[in-house]
Length: 186
Image 1: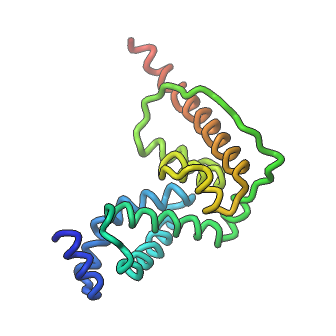
Image 2: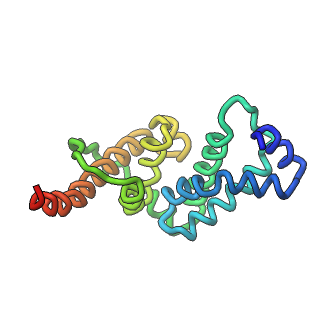
Image 3: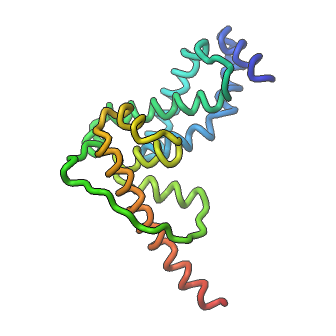
């Protein structure tokens, strides 16, 4: 079924169409949600909440872009709202500007699959993880992230820089055992 037809049927509250739309995008969007939360259970909660928003706002989709990108934006916004609403995340997202400073480290050369990289990103503190996801993965600029999260631009810059530095350190730790194991086989 073409996306336009599918959307029309979803707007008519046809359950089969809604199920089809969900099935088309749920797996990819669960991955998006998981990158912002610390557990699969929380990611599933965000996914469900996000799809409720998708179905209630589907009439606002303008067909001027890709449906998947529109759904992804809703999921990202839903994930951020979820983090800000739940105390276990809210406290981790608040960082004092004065304690942060930019960090610059060269990128290591590491072969890593997507699943491993996502696992490393999820290990970041929530604030760093959220900002890294928004800037590096979702493609928002730091000023947009600042407005989105209600943070000072310098906090966003510092947290993004520190998130990158932490990931680089984790990547180096990840690659060291692999390099040592591979050095004996050459």
